[in-house]
Structure formats: structure tokens, C-alpha cells
Length: 234
Ligand SMILES: NC(=O)c1ccc[n+]([C@@H]2O[C@H](COP(=O)([O-])OP(=O)(O)OC[C@H]3O[C@@H](n4cnc5c(N)ncnc54)[C@H](OP(=O)(O)O)[C@@H]3O)[C@@H](O)[C@H]2O)c1
Image 1 (cartoon, rainbow, N blue to C red):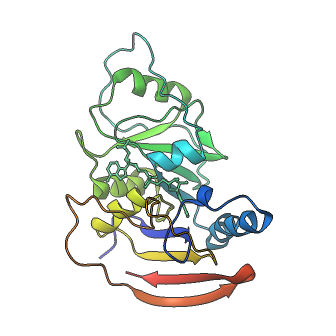
Image 2: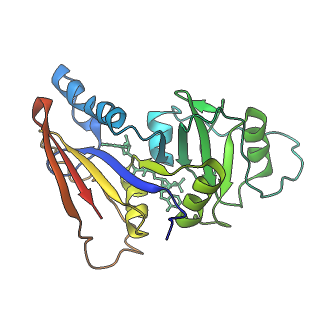
């Protein structure tokens, strides 16, 4: 049967102990070279639509910009909004159920922005998104149903392949929902050792079951600078 959702490929770079926070690894030239592997392999895999969690978007892309709420906005219906875009298939997608991200323009690094919201966000937030041409989709009243979100990404934007690019909590949510098809882990030659730092998948303990998820190792490739590129299928 034809899948109604995009095929989901997760790409993450980690230390050998599975930690993902690059800012804890230092800024030496060697470290920066290693951290650069993420973008390199992102380009090599070549999937044009990417999604990240709210925390990663604000930290790595929107620079913690505050949400803009349009004053005296009329009541807005809760229909999905597709902003003008150039149909290149390049999308930057945020999982931001509670509308915490601040946006000033409709593209991020040239990719059209789509944000995934819950319905109970404010009218003024939606009015501002429409004013600047950002697309938004609803995926639940006050909580996000990831399957609904993915089906809409396929139906409304024609996204057949989606790159899931962290952080830990969005990855954990997708894992818990059984929505990851493939994992590319870039294993960097780094030992982190932090006990507080995030790892590749983090599932909310309230919903996590007892067992781990089994995967199948599809490919192992040693690339430059002692990095292992591991590919697993779910
Ligand atoms: N090493 C790597 O390859 C790599 C890649 C990407 C990111 N990172 C790093 O990862 C760190 C961030 O990771 P993180 O785990 O703290 O955050 P995250 O996964 O980027 O974002 C988590 C947030 O996304 C929203 N979210 C996630 N799942 C949801 C769901 N099922 N329903 C509704 N909302 C959901 C929630 O936002 P609300 O709290 O607003 O509800 C949640 O707090 C950053 O430091 C970043 O630099 C590393």
C-alpha cells in the first residue's frame, strides 16, 4: 500500500557515548572539522525537506527570537495555511506545538518554512505568520499527533522524503511513534562523558515502554577524520 506519509530518515552526529551537544565539545580546529561532517553528509544524502524540534530551531537557526503576535488580529480559523513558495521541494520544518518560535521571514537558509502547531495557539501569532508568508499546519488541539503532521506534509507540500535532524526529544517522539524508517549516525571520534548532556534519542518517561527498539545495520562506512557513518533501517 502506498505510504501516506513521507519516508523519514534521521541524521545525527554523536560522540562514541551517544551524546549530541556539539557546543560541549570545544572549538579547536579539529573539533570544528568534525562538526562540519553533519552538513557534509546532509548534502550528500540530499533530502531537501528537513525537520527539527523547537529547541534546535531556536538555538541553531532563529537565535532565540521571540514570537511576534499581531495586535488587534481578527479571529483566525484553524485551517492549514500554505504560503507562497517556489516548489523546489526545499523546506525547513519546525515542530513547535505551542508557538514559541519567533519568525521574521518565510525562508530559513533559502528553504521555505513550515511550522507545525497545535490549534490552541493565539490568533495574533497566526496572523503574523500569514503576513510574512510562513506555512503552518495544525496537528492536534493542544498536543501534536505526529502522524497527522506527516500526512499533511505529504499531502499539502508533496514531501515524499523527510530528514529528521534532532534534537534528542523530537527524535525520541518520532521513535516512540514508530515513524523513523532509517537512521544515519555519524560517530565522531569523541568521548563526551557528560552525565547531564542529551543523547541521540530521548523519549518522555511517561510514554516510554520497557524495551529498546531493534534496528538492522545496513551499512558501515569509514569517512575522513576517523568518522564512522553508520546506516540502520527500522
Ligand atoms: N548532534 C547533532 O547531530 C544534533 C542535531 C540537532 C540538534 N542537536 C542539538 O540538540 C539540542 C536540542 O535537543 P532537545 O532534545 O533539547 O530539543 P529538540 O528535540 O530540538 O526540541 C524539543 C522540543 O520540540 C518540541 N517537540 C518535540 N517532540 C514533540 C512532540 N511529540 N509534540 C510536540 N512538541 C514536540 C517540544 O517543544 P515545546 O517544549 O515548545 O513543546 C520540545 O521541547 C540542541 O542543543 C541542538 O544543538 C544536535
